[in-house]
Image (cartoon, rainbow, N blue to C red; front, side, top):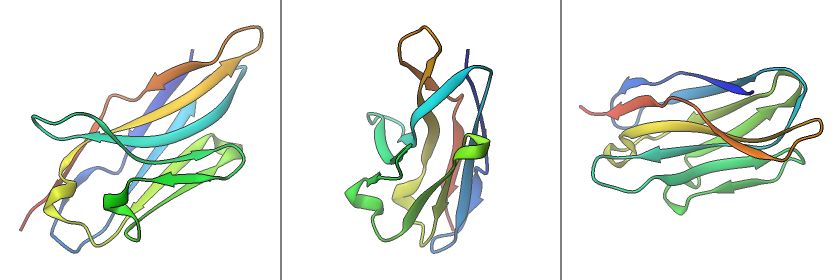
Length: 120
């Protein structure tokens, strides 16, 4: 099994910055895609940013130019640098990973979620 460990959430003022990190922990697996989703109260969960093992990236329109996703393949870790943050960024952020183990099929894994609050 793959366990996703999240860190970096917290409270920040508008215009400030936060960095989220997520590490995939386990044995005998390969990560295909890692990324971050978020869900605000009363709203559906949405993709924030993702990156593939080949290095391609995908961003939600609302965060383009402000957020940057990066990956450390040797550590099975993905980072999300969030700059120029807005109140609209307030949500619970969830790490996501698509992984496959030897002799198995790809599976989707989720972290427990970390709260990000942007407020003055």
